[in-house]
Amino acid sequence: MKKNTIFQHGTMQMLVEGLLEGTLPLRELLKHGNIGIGTGDGVDGELVILDGVGYKIDVSGPAVKLPDDFKLTYADVSFADYHKLKNYQNIGLAEMLKDVLTKNTAQNQFFAILTKGVFQKIRTSSSKKSRKPYPSLGEIAENQVEFEAENISGTMITYYTPTVFQGVGVSGFHNHFLADDLSFGGHVLATTMKDVTVSVQPIENFELHLPIDNQEFLNANLSDTSKLDNVISKSE
Image 1 (cartoon, rainbow, N blue to C red):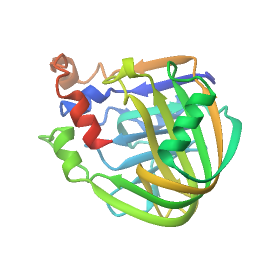
Image 2: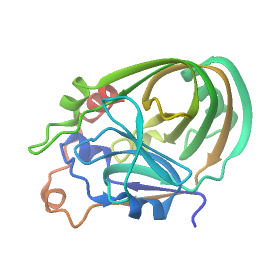
Image 3: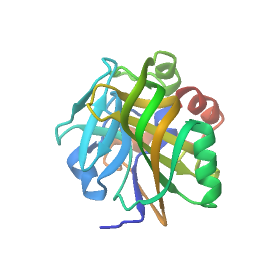
Image 4: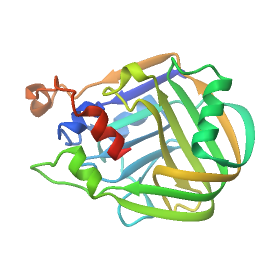
């Protein structure tokens, strides 16, 4: 068990270039962590892993438990080893995350944040599964479905990636949410938190796993990163 390692399957640049085929079963991903976020084959919804169980929030809204053969295109997982930082009340997402990062001097390291409690307002998104020939991530982002909820209890899983790793991952904060009753979730676009407890986990190691058995990945030209920032900003 590597308690201070983020294991990542795939890269954001792969998604930007339309390499969306699922290439790692959930059962294999869970060998590397019991908490995490990601997406499935064809960007099939938004993935949340909590307490070693995988859930998918698709365009229907509620979360559903995933089978262990569900294929992942992109995912970040780690073994939860958080320590409590503080409680926050009536605070916006950007303000809270900035405060956490500053208090932990974490801008140059990978960092995991766990936020649990009551979210006063929250807006999330998800995507409909695409099929071959896959569209680009930019096209998928333009057709995302958004959800809103108020006064909902749940968990937000956050990973922070240093700027230098943009394209490998999502530079900055990447947040996914799962309601306690599984009625709501997805990629977090905005939220105001009513009363939450925030715990943190500094990450020492980053392990990247690539789909080297996938011929499309091996043949792809992933060297042009000129549209990377724009596409990621639209999808995130």
